Image (cartoon, rainbow, N blue to C red):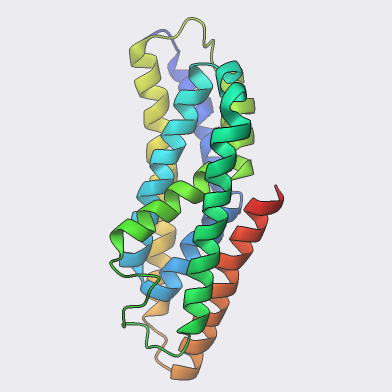
Length: 206
């Protein structure tokens, strides 16, 4: 490795700050955890983490190359994310009266929709784009890094957001299990649906 431990540690601190800054990922994660518990939220966290790795690799291997495809490829992904969250939000609102333990279109079959939602929200997240494409290159000399350096950087980009998102999902899921009132269930589902639609709006206008 050519990068210093101090450089990697400083980057890790920056990733922690990135995670602690609320954004579309937090909104989507909380919405899924409220509607389906931890089982509905952890696939989203996995998808987000893989998206973080993708942004890291793209930043390392050339911002100029990404710029040439950004208008087309990433534009398609962004609008795909808008559609996904609009459908998920509308589904939650339509089924707002269902008990928390029941399956709905949002959570059935569960793993794949959550995973794809995570991919969509991180690829369309302007905060992630700004950080990985604009800030990450300032931490390292990307012209001199080795394969092991790339592995280490990607490891930090993966583990910190993943751990944080799983903890957040677990906390929200635990609070959700304390709620038994059907009236409260409906309020939560409607709120979650509106949050997901809000994510679509944020992605669409940024």
